[in-house]
Amino acid sequence: MTPTPQALRDGPEPCDFAGAAMIALWWAARGEWDRAHRIVARAETADAAWVHAHLHRVEGDMPNAAFWYQRAGRPIAEGPFEVEWDAIAADLLSRIGGNTPSGGR
Image (cartoon, rainbow, N blue to C red; front, side, top):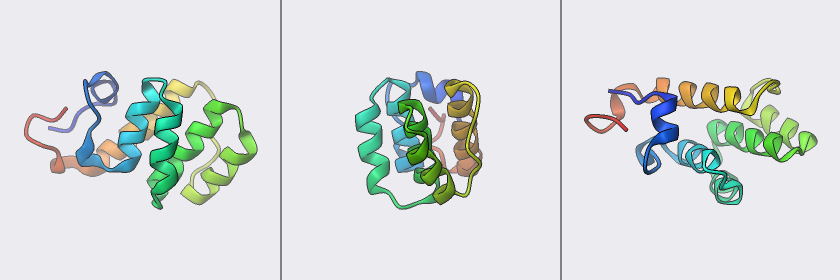
């Protein structure tokens, strides 16, 4: 069973089966911007670039965020940060499908 974005956000540990982008997103939900940023800065995937963009948007560095949205192939997000977080999480979770450990997290 694939966890929901809310379950991911509330989980006691990151979903390590989902890769760097998901782990960074989990840390971001806990206000651990630096830790999340270190994770996505080392990853070279479009998903990591999307989370990287989100982090710089949260930080208020829109020129840097715009660069990372472009690298991710995603439009620049607007609106509440939590809504974007949920959209990223839902997208990432939708693509892992049956690859989660039994019971999900």
